[in-house]
Image (cartoon, rainbow, N blue to C red; front, side, top):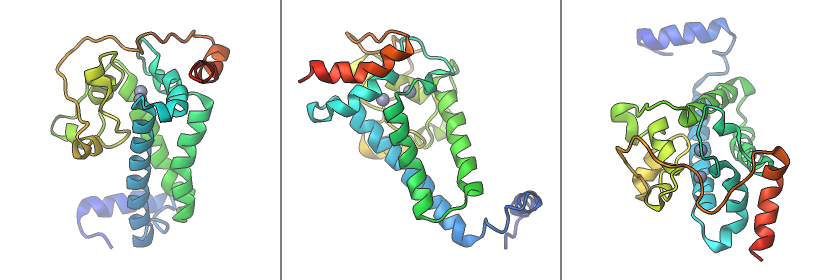
Length: 206
Ligand SMILES: [Zn+2]
Ligand SMILES: [Zn+2]
């Protein structure tokens, strides 16, 4: 059982909502594993899609729909191709099922991630101060959307910027203004055009 007042308070709140029974040690370890697995999986997949390697054109084809936005807003996180969204969902959910985690434990994680990704694209300059090299902040992610090659080839993290620190892809910039999008790649704002874009792109790359 928790021993300090903060843990006691957290358990009391959780217990009130009937969650405490599920939040035992067994699930705590699995939840931590899920957080790391999903965050690493998301980072790895984002890196694959963004690196521009010719063998990975099909991954970039779908991810580029997200990157072709020239103006970022809090809605930008939702401009994701259906195929990519499905893949990201599987990466997040499958480990939860494999680990046997109940929905009431992984669902809050999912909402936290959605909030984080919304903030990452909003016009805010949060950098989380000393935690900048641990958690992905809005200031960290917008660099990944830059048209500048020195900036977009980095900051692949989805939840933890620590992965980029460890793998040498962490990019820090004090710039307050930059251009966003992909040079030479314009995708119309229409939903059908965005859906068809990856298939057209792959057709031209044959
Ligand atoms: Zn990307
Ligand atoms: Zn983004």
